[in-house]
Every structure is written in structure tokens, then in C-alpha cells.
Amino acid sequence: MLLLLPGLAPGDLDAQLPGYKSRNPEELRAQYIQGLMEGVNEVWDRYETRWSEDEDLADLFSGDALLVVPGEEGRRRRDAIEEYFTQLLPVTSGLELATAHIDGSDDLAVIFGPYRVTGVTSTAGTLRDDGDHITVLRQEGRFWRVRLQVFMSAPSGQPRLWWQGEPAERLPLFHLGLPIGSSEFRTRVRRGAIGGFDTTLQHFRAAWSEGDERALRDLVTDDVFLRAPNGEVSLGADGAVAAFRSIPMGFGSLLQTAPLDFESSGRIAVKSSRYVLEAEDIPEGYRTGILYTVMRLVGREWKVRALFFSPWG
Image (cartoon, rainbow, N blue to C red; front, side):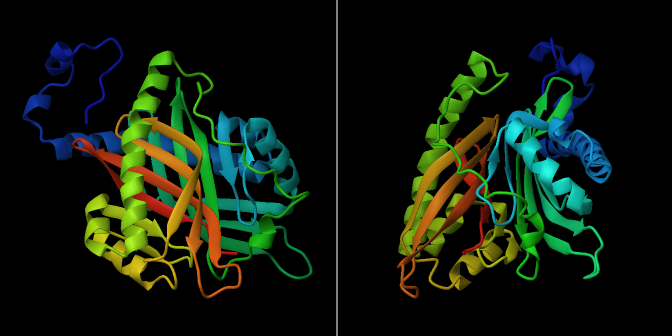
């Protein structure tokens, strides 16, 4: 993928980027990812500094951002996120974010990696929660801002560190309307993307429900990233299929999803959904949680790039 500079026609590319025609797609992709990393590192520096200084952290989030922390359903939009941080930051002493994997397209960057947040020192010692995060950054003018951020505690984590104030409000019903600050063209792109995205997601649900490993393998990218409900992390299609197979009462059980949130740009799309999974081993007969799905357009097909299952409660 190649990003056109503002005001740059395709015929002008050779003059502005000498030798680009002789460079292979892998080189161009590497250049693009390097540029994404520079933007991500800038956001990380500001994020961690403001976290430690308890200063204007919500300003780093988009107006329509979604924040999800352990034990909560989510905080939607900047005012609710700001209210949450007002409660949380006084009882924490630091946050460390890492980038283990990164992908992106046009004005979206998707980052997966570990995090660590520490609580203020007390007579009981310093509280600490470790886990994994998925963060989606959207470029808005000159700045990258957080569009979606999800923290999931490791099985050995201390998620109660995050629980401040009243329980979070439930997420609003899914609505694919004009996002804040977006153009009519972007809306058409989003509506065009969601059709192909949902077709792949339907095939994925069917392959999961039928326990069809071969079909599932064809629906994911070679570098797919998975965080299973039990906290197990795997990278690569073969590792993901093996992890799917190992989930107790998971793979091969009926999987249903209901959409909550959607964002796309170019060859990347991100969707948040509530999932319901048949589970004969518990009285309720089902397990439920939130599924975060990242997809990448490969040729003309959408394929699953990453899956984050929220832990089973």
C-alpha cells in the first residue's frame, strides 16, 4: 500500500518518491509501518507522561472514542472517559504500554502488546495489573488520537485496581452514522467496508460453530494475533487454530455475535461485538463477553488479522 501525499497526483509519484516504481510492496509496506511507529511512539510518550502527571489524558482520545478496562463494559466518548480518569488517576502511579505487533492503513493504526499499570503504595504494598491491550489510533489532522483502547488483565492480574466509582454504563446500541469530524466520502467508505467485513465474519462464525479448522485457517491472515478468553496469546494462523481447538467448550460450539462499534480506513477495519457461545458445562448454557475483531483486506477479501475475546466471567 502506498500513501499519496496531499495534492499529489499518481503521475507525480516518481518525482516526489524517486525510485518507488522499482521498490517491491514489502519495502513500501515497511516504510509505511515505520511511519506508523513514529506516530505511535509519539502518542505513547504523551500518554505515559500525562498518566503520571495526572494531566489532560482524555484529550488524547477522539471525540467518539471507546475505552474498555478490566471488569467494565466500556466508556464511550471523551466526556465519559475524562470522568473515569478523574476517578482512576489519583490511585495509580504509572502506566507502561508496549507495542508487540502493529498494523494499519491510511489514517488508522492498530497496536497489540502488553501493559502494566501500578497503584499507589499503601500499607499493603504496591498494586499492579499486567495484561494485554489493543489500541486503535486514528489520525485527525496533525495528531494521532485513541479511537479504541481495550485493556485485558492476565489470568494472574489484579483487575480490581481499575474498578473506581459506580459501574460503567452499558454500551449504546450499534449505529453506523456519520462519525465526528468525518466527511461524507469517509462514511461511504465505511459503509462499503462493513458489507465485506460482515460476510467474512459470518463465514468465521460458521467455521467456528462447525469446528471446521480448514475453513477457519482460510479466513485468517498468516500473521493473525489471538487472545483467547482464557488469556492465552498466539501469533500466526497455525498457532491460532491450535489455540481455538484447545479452548474448553469453545471451538465447535455455536457462536453468535451482535455488533457494538465499527471503524474502518483503507485496508483495515475494526469491529466490537458482544458474543454468545454455547457452553454445556455451566448451568446457564452459554458464555458471553465482548469480541474485538481486526480485519485486513487481502486482495479483494477481508481476512481476520486479530481477535481479542474478553475473559469469561
